[in-house]
Amino acid sequence: MSRAHVFIVTGANRGLGRSIVKLIAQRAEPNNETRHIIMVGRDQQALEQVAQADAKNTFTYIVPSIELGKPAREITEPILSKLNEVLLSASIASASSVYLTLMNSAGTICDLSKTVDQYSEEEVTEYTAVNFVSFAALTSRFLARAKSVPNVERIAVANISSLLAVMPFANWGLYASIKAARDQLLKVVALEHKDDPRVRTLSYAPGPLDNDMQAEVRASIGDAEQKQAYSDMHSKKKLVKTDDTAGILCTLLDDWTFESGAHIDVYDIIGLPSQ
Image (cartoon, rainbow, N blue to C red; front, side, top):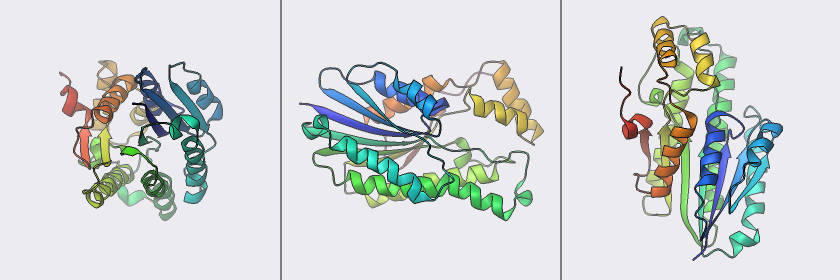
C-alpha cells in the first residue's frame, strides 16, 4: 500500500507555520508514504529557506506573495492552481490512498492598544477581510476540490485558533471575534459532513507562543494586567515553543481520533504550566 499526503500550510514562512512545515516533513512514513507540502506565505525568500529542509519522501512547493488583504479570489486561485498541479503528479496518481490537509496558520493580531469603542469602520472591514474572508473562501474551495479526488480517504481542515475564541479578554475584540467565527465555520463544516467519515475539522489553540507575535503583544497591549502576565510568562520561560505545539497538532491529525469540529487547546494535552 502506498499513500500520498498533500498539505497546504498558510503562513508557512515564519513562526508556527514554519514549525508546522518542519514537523510535517519529519513525520513522513519512509516505507509507504510520500508527503507533499504546499507552503503559502508573503515572503518568497523565507519560504525558499523553509523548503530547503531535507526530509525523505517529502516534496515542497511554494506559493509566494500571498497578501491576505487581497480580494479572496486572488488568494485562493494560486493556491488551488498549485494543489491541482500537485494532484496531477505521478506519485499522487499512483497512490492507493490519498490524504489531504489544509492547515490555516496565517493571520494577524489587531491593534491591542484599542478597546472596541475605538475601532473605525475601515479597521473592522480590513481586519475581517484579512483574517476571515480569505480563510472562509480557501476552506470552501479546498473542500470542494478535495472531495473530488479519487482514492481520497482523509480530508482535514485545521484552523489555528486561540483561547480567545472561547474566552473574552479586554483589548482583543477583533481578534477574539474572528477566531470564534473561524471555529464556528469549521463546526458547521463538521455538521454538514457528519455522514462523510473522510472529512474532519479541528480548531487548535497552540497556547501563548514564544515568537515575534507574542513580543508584539507584550509591547502593545493596553491592558496592564495582561501585559504583566505575558511579561511574567516570558521571563519565567513559560511560553510555548512553536516546535512543541506544532508537534502536538501534527500528532492529533495523524492519530485521527479527535471529534470533528472540536476546539482543542494545547493545555488540554500537556496540562497547565506550574506557577
